[in-house]
Each structure stands twice: as structure tokens, then as C-alpha cells.
Length: 426
Image 1 (cartoon, rainbow, N blue to C red):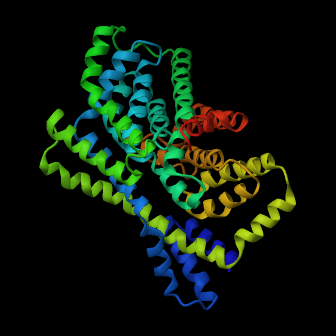
Image 2 (spheres, one colour; image 1 turned 90 degrees about the vertical axis):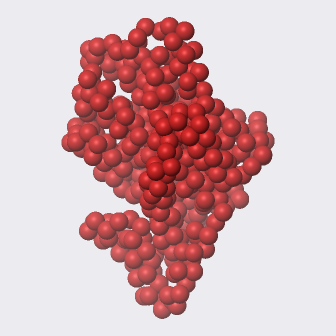
Image 3 (cartoon, rainbow, N blue to C red; image 1 turned 30 degrees about the horizontal axis):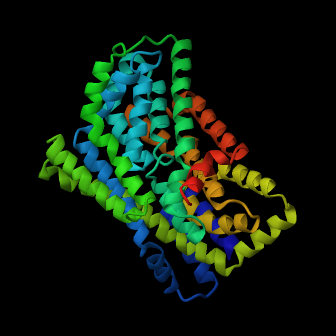
């Protein structure tokens, strides 16, 4: 039954069917072939999405949409430009720093890429080739799932059950996220210097930095309020997401004054559209996971792996190698939902720290958002800037290599991931 489901899913992918429907159709064929009562399929779908923590995803997306519509991105760009604009790769630095701050608002890479692309592409094109401009925005947007709050971390924690908490996953991403950020800034400077790009921005002036910081402070403190409240146990991730929406409305209506009531339907529609795609993936993938479970795939996989190796690090290495190829071929949310229930319990059997394994698992698939042929960020940026995929892939490779280097650092030194959450009691 499992082999039939995987074969049908592969055919659906090849013919171009959306992943969510491909997962659902493969599950339907497998259940029908095994003479299961098909009423089990909608039951599993409803059980998968009828989950309170999942409400955090559309709420964080809505908060991000409202923040962008409120004109905060211009303030973030001005602050970043005053801080890091006058160095080699200054405009690239502005993009990366803006992406980091925006990541702490939206928690989603695609939303960040769309916002940064629509705002910064005209300025980037004045100084950099289109391919490099698109690559920098894609790399900056990919900070979204790593720096909390992160929708990817919420999905992973949900699929892993009680093994990890959302707050613990959030804290696990902070140190690697800033290492990733620092490396991107250095890489941008090196590439800009070697390719002879002109300096941009104004010289560093602390008075200007202070001025733009005061204008941007209301946005900068938002992640500290939301993530700090979640980590401190003041409210849950879902409640924190709702608070983020209220805070975003306050910023838009009161602080910047650029948000109008007429803008809200568009924000709600875009957030709902993105969240519905995630929800459909979760619902349909849950039925395929059910097929795996009744076919004893987790038990068989666990037995096979433990017979193959008793070394936890070999197991981690095998999973990481597998996820590199999975990330190239399957959308990340679908991969979490299908694979986390299979591998998270096995990692516990090996005695592997669930927070460390969870972050590595999540981050590996995040890198897949920038790797062809299914790198969703490449498609988003190619659609915005009309850069051919081959050229964009070539320009984005240095940033992809750096992301894999950070993955290697986190594997070699687990404390980079676990020290902060353990210090906070996770």
C-alpha cells in the first residue's frame, strides 16, 4: 500500500499536480486499494487541522501583511541603510538586515521575499545585476523560517508531538540565525568587492542612525514582545500571534498612519490564501501519514535503520543527506508533515537531543527553498524580476553554500543550537 501511494504521488508530481492534491490523491488510491472505508480520509484531514497551535500560522502571516501594508518596510530599509549602507555591498547589507528584521515579524520566507522584492528591487537594480539582486533578496528572505517567530518551527513542533515545544524551537534558532546573518553580510561584501560594485548609501553617522532607529523602534521591539512573551510563558504561540496582529494594527493605524480600513480585506485575503495552502498540505499529508502508519512504515523504518547502524551520529548524517535531496524535490511543509512523524521518534530512540535534531531537520529543509528544481524562493524571485532560473541559480549558489556551512557548524557543535534553549529551561 505504501509503495502504491508513493508511486501515485510521484506520477502526480511529474504531471504537475499541486503537491497538496497529489498527496490527497495518492492517499485516496492507497486506501481504496486496501478496501478501507473512505470516510477515514476526511476524518484524518479534520483531525490534522483541527489544532489550536496551527492558528498561529495564519495569524503571524496576517501580522506580517498588515506590517508591510503599514509602510514599516521603508522605515526598516532607512534604518538598515543608515547603519550598514556605506560599505562594500552596502545595499545588499541593507537587504539582508531588513530581511532579518522582517523575518522576526512574518516568520515566513515567501512572504518576506514578496515584500522585499516589491520594495527593494528598483534600488538594487541601479547598482547590481538582476541575478545578484534576486539572489540577495532570496537569501535575506530565507532568514524567515530560522529567526523566530517561525511558521516552519510551529509545523515541526506540531508534527513532533510532545518531543519539542514551539518556544524551545524558537530559542534554538536564534544563535544559528545570527551566525547565518553575519556570514551573509561578509559574503555580500566579498562578492561586491570582487565584482567591483560601487559603494552605496551615506557614510555612517550616529545621529542619523539614532534618528532612523527611533522611527523603526516600534517595529524592532515587536519580536521581543511576542517571542519574549511566548518564551516567558506569558502566553502561548497562538496567543502571541494574535497579539502580533493587534500590535500590527496599532502600528498601522496609530504610529505610521498609513494603514486604512480599506486595506484590511486585501491583507486578510493574502494571509488566508497563503495559510490555506499550508492547511491543505497538512490535511492531505496527514492522510498519507496515516497510510504509512497502518502499513507499519515507522516500525519497519526504525528496525531497518537500527540494524544498519547503532551510532547516533551516523543516523543524523544519513537523515541530513536524505533531506538535502528531499528539499530539492518536495515543498518543505509537505516534507515536515510526511517525514517528521517517521524520524523524530527514531531520533529519540537513539538518545538524540530532540531540540537539536528538530532544528537540524527544519533548517535542512529550509535550505531546500533555495535549491533547484523546486526551490520556491527561486520561483518567487524569478517571477518578480524576470531573471532566468539558470542565472538566478548560479548567483544564489554562494549563499546556499554558506547555509550548508552553517548546517555543518550546528552538527559539529550542537551547543550552538541547544545552549540558549537549555539555559532558558527548555
